[in-house]
Length: 143
Image 1 (cartoon, rainbow, N blue to C red):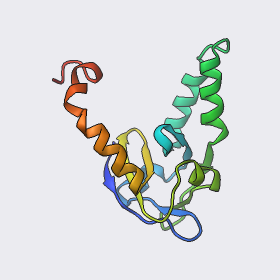
Image 2 (cartoon, rainbow, N blue to C red):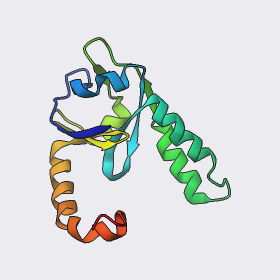
Image 3 (cartoon, rainbow, N blue to C red):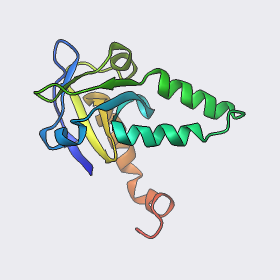
Image 4 (cartoon, one colour):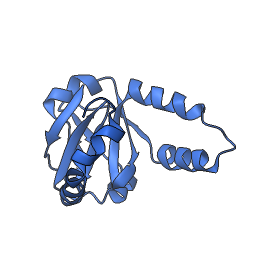
């Protein structure tokens, strides 16, 4: 399971060093793509294949489905970490997420999200404020 929060730096070549605890999970490859709220999603390759299969089941007659597919897949990039666990975040995704040097990487269970640290801090402050109220709607039985 991919969980936790990490604060790596983006190097001058646009590379992210994956947190050591996740490197084995991504050793066979990963897919980076646009995420909601202007972050970058990082899926293990096998997990992304499942996401893609679910997307294929969406009705072609739905404009919302077509739009989502286009945005997600047009920004997708296959990567294989190097021996040091580094992956290049393509310029199109760095621009999407407004990534500079300071990053926050969070594990969300089945994927990682890469955020500009300032953007993450603002998002988290807002999300944390409504955290208690969301439990019954988001996770039935947890509250």
